[in-house]
Length: 111
Image 1 (cartoon, rainbow, N blue to C red):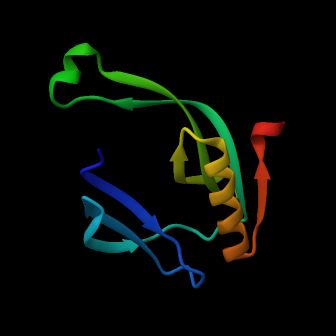
Image 2: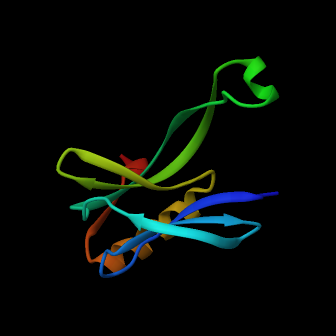
């Protein structure tokens, strides 16, 4: 069950927001500042996260997970905007963002 979440709201005018929610109810939002993408990419990989909190910290300091991510690329800089275990969901999200922003989308999982 997802109690607390942080998500991005990407708008066509690129006045984006970062949303903080509890039980799906947005409690707070802030401006989200990153560069307009030259292109959007979908790819799979193994990603690690720190687990420095609660009882899981005793098990080690990092966890590794296989994910499919959607990233915005501007020149040689990248911003991850979506992460999931579901390839189809990631591809759909990237396609929607590509259409909304009018930029090309590349599926790097097929290379």
